[in-house]
Image (cartoon, rainbow over all chains, first blue to last red; front, top):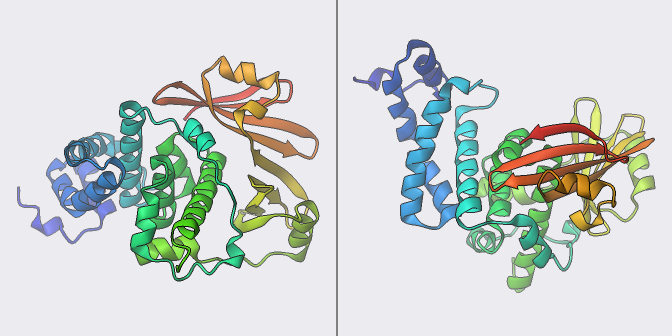
Length: 190
Length: 132
């Protein structure tokens, strides 16, 4: 089927046609729009090409199956990213036996830096990404969901299977850890 | 890329009623890394107090509605901990301090992919149980 005439439509409009008119071929448009972005997010957490390729495939299959449950309370992209983070974190929890409480208690932040006393405006992006790779994948996912993808706290909580209060507090801690590590490792200059 | 850094480090300001600022500073004068937000009619502040994450909520008159404190599982009271552990391994625990009562929000792991949130009062009665 030629889907060209639908390519200018918004994500949510395409989802609506898929659900209401059962025009399943249109999912290909969404796949093409977001395949790369989902791939990058997964690789950022999984750090394994084969695992990432499989995961992206599974995430889109899962998204397709769950499409009728998409209520449109958030954008389709937010919803897809939320599904993606959830999939990757679940995978790491099972495969790598990720255990955040144990990791957190053995990696206590030595000092909560007062951010009002620091100039954080000159942070270097590449250095920041290196710091992100030093923290727990769940903390990394939380920071990316909140500050890069701007997902609502409710979606973040659902993705990581934690309450909204726990999500807020863990994001706070993850941010404090990033600031501490950045200052410790790159104390010469921000 | 720019969005990540901007959102992560740029401080957002929120216009707060004087009563709310006063109420907060009276309760927490050693707080740091304070982030305010408004949820409906409620003013919520997320901050560090003695190296611990806390969330406090105020009404517009500066009356404290509740304070949520992140606590390590081993600091849960003796009557609360076993009730939670009976449902699974404790993964997260929060003390909820309301003006007249204490509650505990505990997240337990039944298996690697199943987490349950328990809301308990200080008598260790489960008021809410929700699969997350």
